[in-house]
Image (cartoon, rainbow, N blue to C red; front, side, top):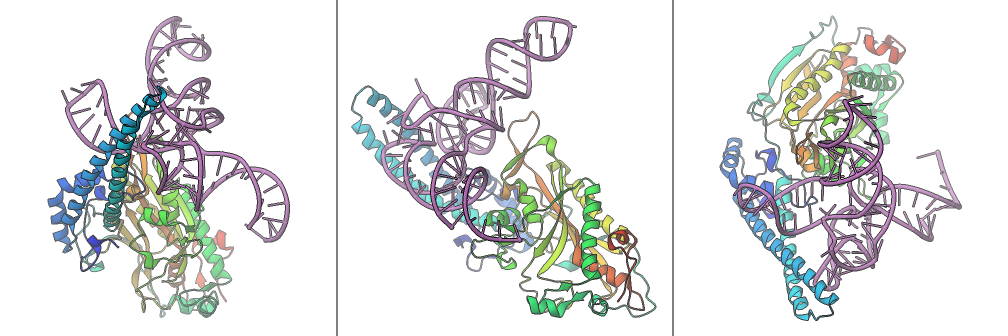
Length: 452
RNA sequence: GGAGGGGUGGCUGAGCGGUUGAAAGCGGCGGUCUUGAAAACCGUUGUGGGGGUGACUCCACCCAGGGUUCGAAUCCCUGCCCCUCCGCCA
């Protein structure tokens, strides 16, 4: 851990995405960040105050100053070395002695090596600092502490009136013998379940229905690796800060993805896209794996919170000026799935305190669950602006313009399959314990009713 | 798992210690020619960063990371990826 971040320093703070740098791998990318910090130190301080958070910003700035000074010195020395070395080459070809110059350059080379080593240490610290700073919220995001300060944007559908007591999905599922929590726990452990018969079929039907609907809207279907390396996890922001949320393999070290966002966004890591390629729309089904550390006692029963679940994801790479419109249409695409399934939901705009680390603006879509008599998150649609693009170095080039820019990345669940299944069981349950299959799924299910 | 061979600019492909950021060809862009197009010819054509009002100039990058050297695309080490053959295997 780096010194700036250790001790009592609180890391939650707001800082413009433009200073979030990619990692050390991309040499030279820190200059822009240093300049930004120098010129915006007051802006940053007030942003921190507003959040009631602190970080050693001045320590960071001082470190940056050192870094720039050393970098300049090293560059000058390199220039000298290049010029003199060429001279040495000339002399040698003419058969003349160059011993004095050679020994001079030996000291220069030593000094360069010395500076480089110091620089490496400093860069490790600054990079670590930057990687642990969250994205800055968009201006349209309400300020707030937690989920209680979120604002409801809209509602769709009317929760059904039951003339009997609506059951929880686990009661429905166990009666129908389509989900087996006991066996899931035996095979693996808590928060794992076995889907059986029409339950397994429904899981598969939802996956296909969602992918078919998404691809019909121009999202290209992707089936990515579900084990990824450290660089990919860093690119989308899961690492280094949220390692405790991830499952990982030991030898070789890979990470199990917590969402398809990771492999799909990283498809274009370290790439420069052509302007004519944008926007890029992807949709992907994958299993997702989450440790759910710190959620002991929450949703212990049922399918709501599992260590492994299935999800269909929507991912976009867009031009900066389009990203907020794209967020609206992305959210609409996710909502459309619920509408076609006839599931009542509401859409919520997350406040500053409830948003994810990498996001600049997030809509959560919450589906109505009669068993719990409340709305539960079933999709989360976010605009990351250039936060992920900086970390993952995803750029594009405008036609006829010099240089490159970072793309904006977005993603959203379209949708979480397990929770959709829960919503169907609870919303479509009948007094006799059977469950009506929503119209749009019947061709996938080969049935109209789930019964025992 | 065993034995070899490779990774160079948008692509093909030279270079294997010193005017090589990189030959040549193809492609792209601009121009000449043409009624227009093709062909031909001429020119141009990577990314990031620093400095300068500017002409311009400096640094880094030939898979990645270390090392040797006054000097590395070129030599050494490690990793990653690709190809061929053998073995094994869903």
